[in-house]
Image (cartoon, rainbow, N blue to C red; front, side, top):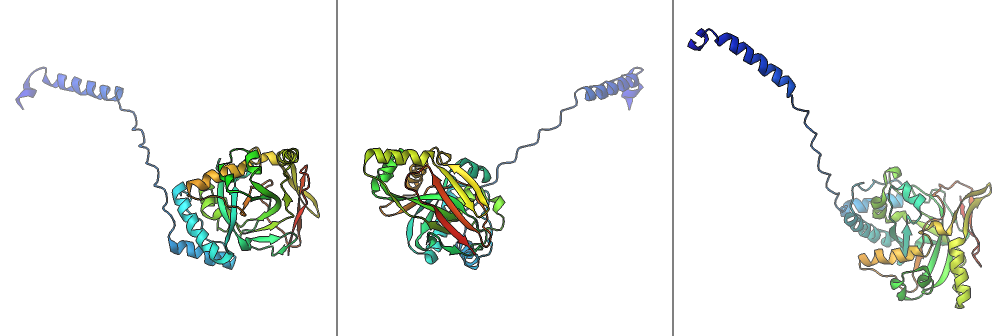
Length: 310
């Protein structure tokens, strides 16, 4: 080409190429920052067929498929409602509700900071001293708990433990026997646990304590609920213990939380219903031949409650 015949053309081209090469090294672009992937969409409410399969497995005492870990609150509530319909078909009429994950130690196990709730049905509640199969569910557990019985619908407006106590007529020792029911319990988080009705399966009801009308006696009961030490023991000795204050600062705060959660679903506590306040002890697996007793030390008038596993 004619341009290369110029006496300075070739040196200039070579020098220009070298400068471009050096410039390219000096201004080499930084590696591109990885583009953040959008979070996966929440899993939808489980279909009717899936929930019916849960019931088939529940009745067969075999583990069922886990709900998706990425359920959001709305999908968990929808799934829970479907599951509660299935439970009611085999466990009888609704008799109350349970507040779950009210203890920070239990919340930590399920990677959440919020309580959850489930429904209780008539045939779930057993008499004090009952004997149940050690495999009463596919993932059977036991924990120290307590019930209160609703006296007045005004409990739905209660905002303090004292206001709750004014609207219940019984405080009842209780050993809950939950069933985590799924193939992989360690993968359950708070929303997934909510979807399976917080694993409600059975519970043993102790001797009720009447809530006194006398203001001073009621205050002693209120203080005793907060300050009590709840001990779980068997023939080998004390298995675990917890304080009343471990449950949301005061056990009756579980009712305050529950009424708010139910209100969001268009539900209310009714007179005569019972409320499970949550765990005062770790969840523990039962053993064949084991007799488990829960005592409420420091709670005036509270009697032990016992369950036997065969």
